[in-house]
Image 1: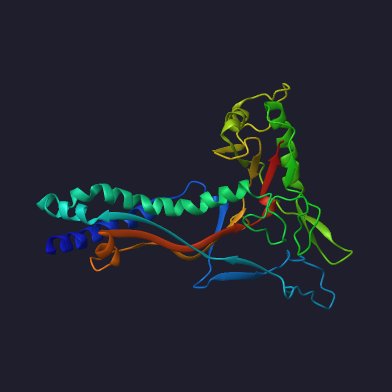
Image 2: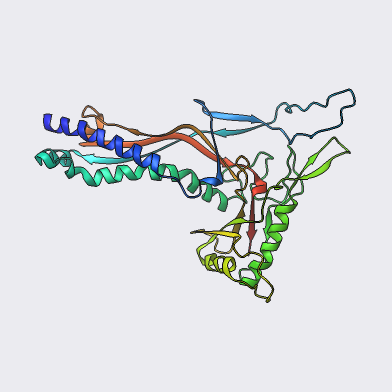
Length: 323
């Protein structure tokens, strides 16, 4: 028992070092889909809705004030997330009898533990991709305007509007995709918010800093079509290709093999998804006194955190739906 106890103490130090190293070094590739913020130690965070500021106006003696509308809030609830790597008593005892090689006897488990922070940091992004595919329904909730993430009745307000980020595609051939990309670009250019008082509102672009590049998230079968479009000089009709070098293509195993998505990640705050963090994923360290060791003859190294992903800026993503 003393040999196993000493080995557990030694391995706990190694496991902690490996976990922290991997957590610090790993940077998820598509983290820019998310706007990350801390909720604090609460079950949920509620945000009072506020429209874009009305802008600068000529001062004529009375200042124009803007306040939060009372009663309207957008709420994101934190969820608990967990995973674990188990090491059975027999493996501890066998490693304990390896003398100076005892830690090496646990190398396979060390490798699994070093993978845990990578999976944990990638998990919110995988959630975002799941939510992207389901964005034309309320499976994962709605946006702050109470519409589905992909909808034909969006607004930058507390009531439904007429702006659409759900487009009907013309098909999945190269020519179809080329034509639909033009519709997508026009939609991104046209999204707006109303600035100014009632009857005096001016339309201001929501994507005013967009430089024309976009991320394409598509089913596996459409990946080559978009990659080709990103590199070729001419469109299918022989005209010069305006999309060359402007598409960042990501393929996913989507259930619907005809729909695809265009996403903008040009703004540091207004992102397609919100990533609310109450507690980052941390490593739980076991001891021989744990019930799991006495009852089930194993020790568990668990990764546990509290956070959630919610829909964010609807004007940063467009679904092209093909039948």
